[in-house]
Image: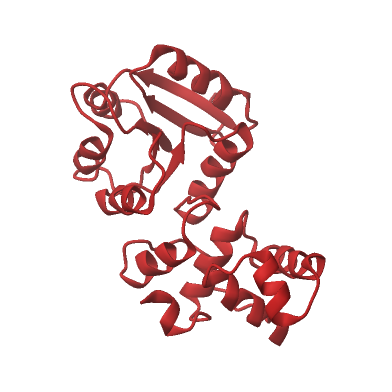
Length: 225
């Protein structure tokens, strides 16, 4: 009998070595199982007709059917499936195109195992995954424009005035040192405030904290312009 708590994964990646390596890595995570791994987007779509999965990893560049076109076709018949695009590209324009196509997030092929594991569970918990490298301003823009609608619990957290000040600056892409200099605090104090806010919200990374701030209108309008 299959464990219903296991996160089932599908992979579409044309490079055999990377495909096998990703499959082995994902299967090593507790509570995760790769159900199938195929070579292109069309094969993935065919598999989805009779094999149910929770999350799929799609390579951006594949023969027959590339990643973004595969996402668009999947969304015509499957709205709830979590889709992660994997690519060597890593700029804001690409990330925005990925989200606009209907994907739930992206990963760089250079990301480490912890980041990949975080992506799987973040997608299942909030509906989206974006890395700490992703522009905070871009995240705010995508959320305000309705392109990202994370499934964050509708709970209001009581932040201290100092935490709110730090949160505003995080959303405006201030570095830790810049926040420390502006608030006349140490880097350790800023890092501690950030960690505590992430714990309060239940965010796995800073991006989750930014998403929470935008969803609950804790970000000034100028951040999202």
